[in-house]
Length: 229
Image (tube, rainbow, N blue to C red; front, top):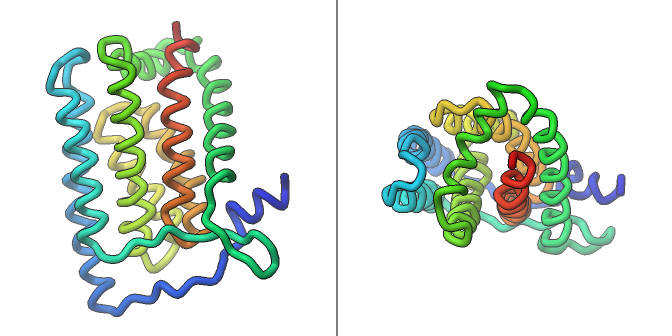
């Protein structure tokens, strides 16, 4: 377990993702513009009344914003992790297991938070969308937005930061999420952002962060309504 976590979150594999000063500046400008735009769209989407037909187009629109910003900024990479002393491979199973483990931690935390009136209400305000909408469609939205967010924050934004990219992208992700006005969402963004940021640092790509994020968010979508029932 310890060796697996070290490979997944700590050990940096060799990579050559060098970019020119011009390309770096362009990426920085593009990501700065899109992080503001994405925060605005996110805030609007989660301030729509639960059950409104506008919620689905707004959330899909947010995924489009993150995805366009990611690919407009420059090249993205899938990344690899160490398999043996001489082999590298695409990270698949490890990130999924990490996402499940992170979700389990949040579920335990949810059992505590539900007993706290204000914090519990913050979580329930998010779950209202699950109560009013189609679970299948919400699951699709959750997966699509998870992929788009990682393409942007651990792909484009991470590559745009020259110092402390894990910290900077985690803070940027949390600040963008705070546009919803929901403290619990921002808190979750900090913890999730730190984990997937370390995965990005170790693997050099977005595949591991995407798999962890999607696994975590899909599990939370299905588990939290049970916890807060």
